Image (cartoon, rainbow, N blue to C red; front, side):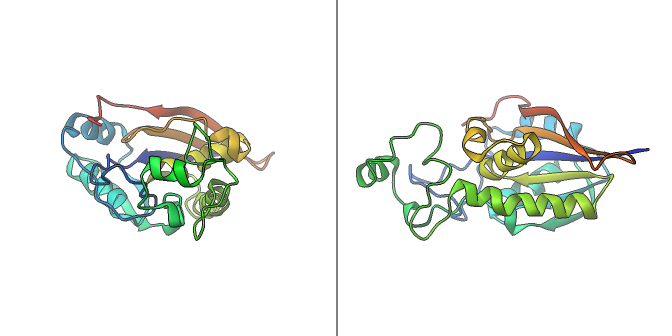
Length: 211
């Protein structure tokens, strides 16, 4: 007998009030202008009786609320601080140019820094993987066999992909995760083995987000 726990990962709506600065875990609001078609497309495909696990940053919470207004529904909802975006520490509030000028050795194209580079007073992307994965394991166990709608961030969604595919953190930084995109990862268990992950799709979009 098999059992599937289905994870529906959604990245929050765009953030536009950052003035070109690195914001990471800064609690900035989402901008929903021009997202109606995308939000409706997401709401229409989501299961109606799932469990919502939402990052506690306001842009993720507001995205979950917008999905509900568009017709999405879940049986219960919880906020999960471990699904927050990466904490860039002292880099938050800097422009990308200011970061490049102060950290010239970080000539890196895929993300702000390599996976194991930890900003002062912040965390590395590898640290993000280290906090996201235990939360996934916990919720997969406590909500086994159910649909989990996770509204989170690019970093935490990449961490989930890294875990599901068994990738090292550096490799998983190659994935593009757009605002209001959907990533579907299913954990499948049977009586004969512990379980495995099935990747249905990554970064699926509905309509065009405006930014």
